[in-house]
Length: 170
Image (cartoon, rainbow, N blue to C red; front, side, top):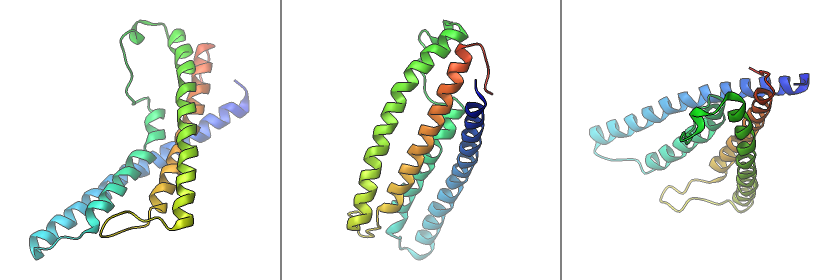
């Protein structure tokens, strides 16, 4: 594979590794937030209305930002009915073909996410709850996560092409 493609794959793998590890620590923040809520409810007898919603936003951030890293580690769900019996070359060819479908899907997610984020920014969209937080921050995080997934899917596509040719980009 040409040098720029190798550089792209290394850059995207590194970027998603950093973001993925950061996303793992978001889960620690989530546990702390829920523990704080439980402790204050136990001590004071009152609960905060923002905790459940903030926990949902934090969980979305965790899942979305960890998506590219999950793709990089090949830890996503795969139907293994015939796959394990195929040769490495056949697996690489079919992975390269099917990843194009996933790329098309993620591009549509990005288009919808950008439109929804712009709407939330433009009109000051808020969630329908007692806390009523603005929605543009979580929608922006979702778009960033989808873009990171698209970058990683493209890098994985190049890796699959290289494997199909008998090369390695790892």
